[in-house]
Length: 251
Image (cartoon, rainbow, N blue to C red; front, side, top):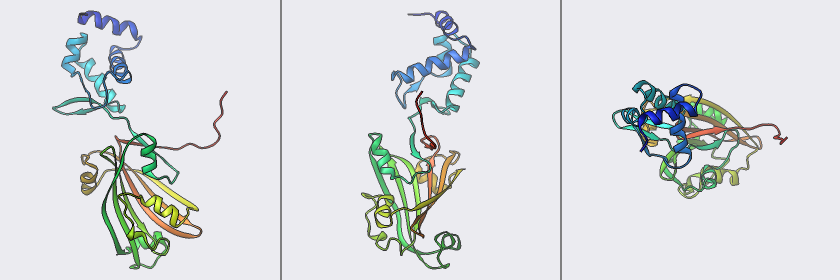
């Protein structure tokens, strides 16, 4: 078995930068090779000190930076764990989240929290181009990937655009899939923002109140009619948003 001094020497030889960078790379190598899979507990600061012969400050910095980079999840009093790979959504495409999850080989599930006819608030009425107090359809759904909540979909729908909206089973069919068929998309607008979750959102997403989230406000049209407005909330550590534009060329 290699002594701590030997391991420390290897870290220094394999990395021309500071020692903590060598510790980071050692951890990353084990993660990327699959030796340490998602949710695997990595050695603590004290264990790294003993195993590698580095200082506690060096071990702490390596773990702290890997957590900041999203490679590890650190839970105070418990330890550091390999982060799960983030799912992703296309930023400016109006895609079906069930399809995105299926493309990753994972299982999509949906929990319907609200599905009801309501009266439009001033904000909702303005967005849907209706009179204040007019009837609207409201759905609140939590989408999960492999049993883990990844999106809250809070949507208001113009009744004339999709009159049978409330009759749908949104545990087997997503609102996106239904609306795309009932009122083919002709245009959309998106507003993306970072947001801290509300207490009720924390419960639905099973995240701490200090967990930053990604939020998209999306409005869609079919022909010249506004079909729906939606607020989509994603836990920041579980999801990422992607966008590409222009042509991609190979040299």
